Image 1: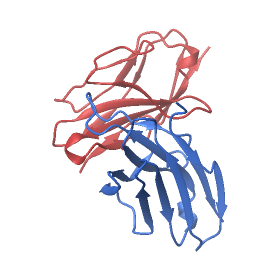
Image 2 (image 1 turned 180 degrees about the horizontal axis):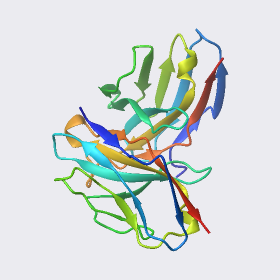
Image 3 (image 1 turned 90 degrees about the vertical axis):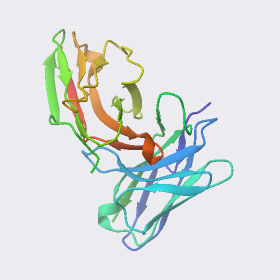
Image 4 (image 1 turned 90 degrees about the horizontal axis):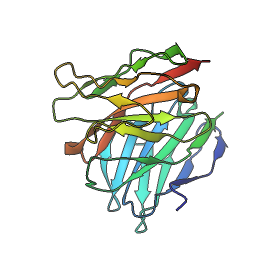
Length: 115
Length: 110
């Protein structure tokens, strides 16, 4: 099991463009969460997907949207990119209602640079 | 509002010295607390969780609901402990939403 995988590794976009980031969860996991980690800060929760629906959302504008597919993989879309969207985007997968609480397994992240 | 604070952005200790990374949280419900660690050039990974009450790599953390704290401790720091440490709050009533603190960078001086 490769664990959580994300693509691409790095991405450079210009302001106003749109971007799609992809995530494949750890085998057996059904829940995917997305985080934004700006330089020098902790991960900030964007939203979480379960059963192909968004069920939790952090304090992010509607420019941030996502999708979960039947195979549990997920996409994060960001429209109308701003300079401030430059960050490391982390995907984490977990198992719904796992005993002991939501242990999240993280991917390596996608580094997005907006110029 | 739910929040996690880690007052120290940087913490340096000598090898063999005790280390304590502080974490405080605010949450009105029943919290689930975690410590995640990120070593250089590696992905974020779970170090320990309060519910398991186990010691991982010599680290322990006790949940103090009265002080709303979940400090991470190790009696004798090792050089390989140098990493970024994040305290995280899980909220089961919010469909497993997890909130991370800003992190503490631990540097163990040989």
